[in-house]
Image (cartoon, rainbow, N blue to C red):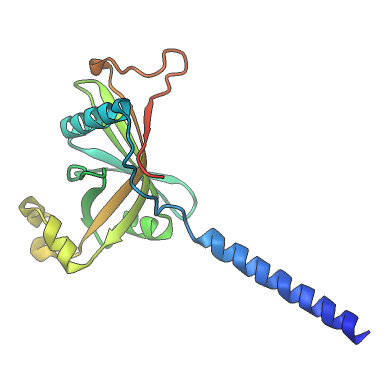
Length: 188
């Protein structure tokens, strides 16, 4: 009887350990993906045209998720994407978006160029950056009016995993039946 009780105790403890592992694994996100280095010619063309459209659009719309799971949008003035399409944006450390990003890093950055017309959507994860070295590296003199003395200034680092675009001016109108945009997986 003691062996049977010990076995049941062991099984219950193992269930707790398995539940703990499952819980912890659900907390670990898959957003630390690696930049691809194997883009084909078509993907490279789409990425080049996306950069062109992003530059023409100038402003972007950042979409985050609030604590209720609702999407929140706001116009941002992002810096140009770097070589891996990582984008930096300045914001106030007390803004809603900072809390939302800390709670749920999933985000979208959307650019629309009315003159083309066309758009680029970047899907990925955002992070709040507050270390002085990085803040100094990306600081723009024009931001002084919004962050006098750099007070409350932090950066959002947006790392996209996927890009979608429509650019009719460059003969990229999307699928004629479904309107599906062109897509490039940036990170695996």
